[in-house]
Image 1 (cartoon, rainbow, N blue to C red):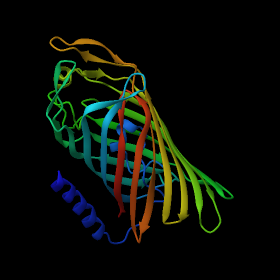
Image 2 (image 1 turned 120 degrees about the vertical axis):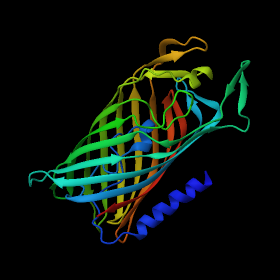
Image 3 (image 1 turned 180 degrees about the vertical axis):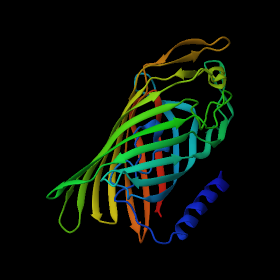
Length: 337
């Protein structure tokens, strides 16, 4: 694990040293899905207007950790094991003008890879006279994401300005998922997520500015037929038919200077009831829970150092149903050629 973190840090530093002449977008730090459970696979652009006719790379590393979960009643319950996840997300983005209009097309591909570990000092624990194995690990490729978006021109009236950026993304189940692991990088299902994003900003004196960014969308989850036997044999449930998600993501930005932005991010996601298999021996297909819900919030900073844009943020789950009660963090470099 230590070697993995050193390699990722070296890649980020080397990438920044190789930059030559860059033209940064007006804004580039968030992704279109806006949901806590999909936090790791956010794209580089959700808001603002990316420059046209550019090739952009976004080198990002994310971390997640939780040792408790919210149950079906929204109560926080401690787990007998802690789950941690490191993911490196090289993102490749291409933009171009559409028919010489004010619209800019954006096409983006994300190929994440990393490691998820579920660990405890003792590999087995006994709960209610049942023995559970909570020592597990999964590493390799995560699910590939493909984004397509069209940004409109920025509309302004005095100190007020606004823009719209409708997007759609596709999750390709190419990740390292298997039914013998209770923790996986992949999800073994297709997702389609149409999203409307945008920004409303107000220009303040001395080059300062405040802005509200938003992302509102819907995630269609196809589900899958393969039972995760590792989860079932550990006394857990294997969700094979997850319901669809509604999600919203909001940012309150304060631009201290044109190169420095501090912001608060708050995310909300609500999912319908989930079905799947539960029960050792012969699993039975039934409703597993009333659905996933998550509310998370935190703070972040964007900073331009010469022609390099650095993004960092930390979020914490506040409340939820049937999901992790944990901490999320992210650091990244954005490069435009």
